Image (cartoon, rainbow, N blue to C red; front, top):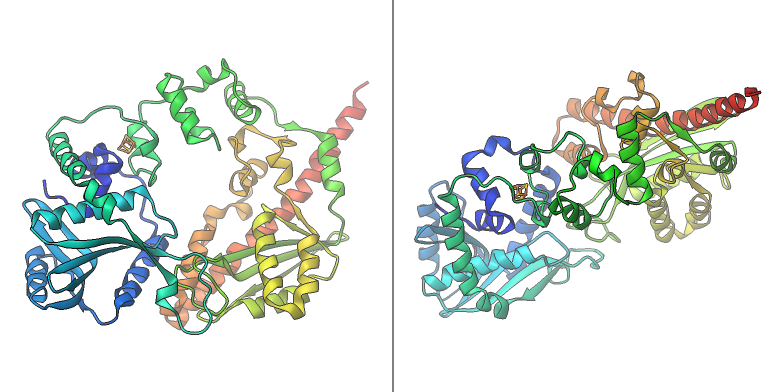
Amino acid sequence: MQLSKTKYCRGIQCKKILWLDTYKPEEATQVNDDAVLENGTEVGELAKGLFGKYSDVAFSKELSQMIEKTKELLLNENIVITEASFQFENLFCSVDILKKAKNQIELYEVKSSTEIKDIYIHDISYQYYLLKKLGYSITKASIVSINPFYERKGELDLKKLFVIHDVTNIVEENREQVEDNIRQMERYMKTEEIEDNIDMHCFKPYPCPYFSYCTKHLEKENIFSLRRMPKKKLIKFYKEGITSFEQLKKININDPYKRQVLYELEEREPHIDVEKMNMFLSTLQEPLYFLDFETFQEAIPKYDYTRPYMQIPFQYSLHSVENGKLKHKEFLSKPNVDPRRELALRLVKDIPMNACVVAYNMMFEKMIVKHLSELYPDLRQHLLCIYENMHDLMIPFKEGYYYTKEMKGSYSIKYVLPALFPDERDLDYHHLDMVHNGKEAMYLFKDMINKEEREVEQIRKALLAYCKLDTYAMVKIWYKLKDLVDTKQKETMEVP
Ligand code: SF4
């Protein structure tokens, strides 16, 4: 078996992933997250310049070419090489950045993350082990990560954007362990498929793409369908043999989980708490402004006063309701410009001071508005007013004032909406063109700069339609909740 650092890390997460990658790759269900991948590539490219001038070993399907090129470059006494590639027996690796000064070598593994995960240590331990086996003298092994507190002002400052973590002592200590791990992986690959190995490693450090495959022996609705239950607890139940909703019904679990189980098993009627719902609805006073932002994130801050992975709003949709009249306003930035100032100006124009603003899961919208208010002192008062007057339409679902079986324990709008409006095509995100969720919106918006004018127009239309549906859905939910309360109250009054 040929191992690379990626394969080694997959094997560290769970040996069965390696086995399935080799023998049953078609069973993987999860697709790669392009946005994350893209960020990773962008960060890797930028980090190459961290130590100034460098020589790059170009990628080749012929690994031997990369290895030969590396040998050639290593003849230099002092050099920085990126993607330096090495092979020892059946182990291969490319080092993100290698610094050579005389005969001393330093290794740098670049990550687009803002934190150091254990799996990164495994990654660089593997590289260190391999180079040591080849006889190199390594004086330093480090992980390069992103500094989440770096705020861009003017030109990018790579020395401040990246943080270097020296892990030399740890990788030296890990050498024996790496050897042991490799031997175990090799042995495992020669075995038959092992049936069941479900544990925390199915979720960490990455959600495993074979999870559906490995849990296919469970009932359709099983313990892992429970929403928001901590993974550790799920695994504990699983190991105790408690996997079905029937079993869960008989044990003591907290309310939201119990509710999901009972509604699923007993085909219960929708639950509505009229009193609490009335109290909530009375906080929403017309004119109402239903607001939703779309945002993008960049590992490398593009604009002044932005930090890595900060949520940058580029679009909003706003439906307003007053005396039964529905109006719609929207904003969508041009690509490749800092959208925040124009967006903030439009927002304060579109939402009057002291108006009642409604968002779904408002913490997100609040965070955006707060940030804008800190950025633009001239708009601060108005933006803070919007911030203060925001209400969360998610509350009735999160708190269980209204619940149906179809919500399957979730209070996300993507579950609530079809549960409330099962047959309304206009409210079905699946029928939208190109954009069906926030991630797709972010990805397409960022990709607009690479597109022809005609395609840009298509994407703009799709983005506008998607965001508009988000706020239109909120309006419909609000009306529906009022109707449900009215109907319930009438029913109660009619009972003799
Ligand atoms: S789902 Fe879990 S047990 Fe199955 S391959 Fe993935 S990590 Fe391993």
